[in-house]
Image 1: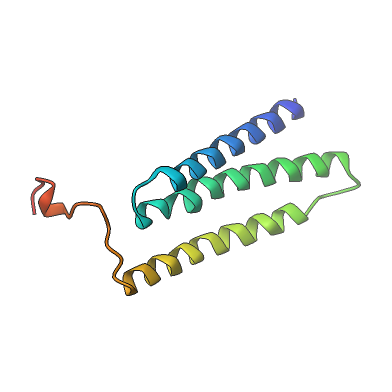
Image 2: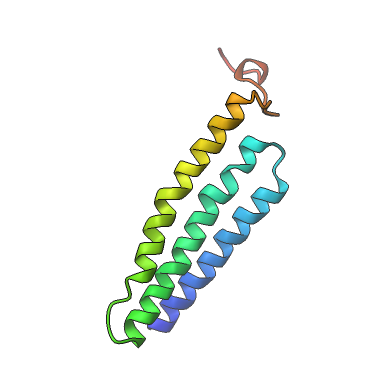
Length: 108
């Protein structure tokens, strides 16, 4: 049963990481590319780290806390770095390719 859970977590992590990487490579401008690694890839790596913690906790001598610390560090630093990158892009007045809301035909 544990093997099925570990397989599910690894496959889920791989799929999220792949989707995040494709988003980084395929999206059109900086602001939309920023979402790929900060959202989907963070969830993917988090899922892989949870699978690793479960595996080494059940196969090893005791509770494996290395992966928990890495996950905590990842979940704290990814949003902060994305926020700083977005603020730097705004400060440099980097243009977005997205249309403003009034140009999309919606109500203002």
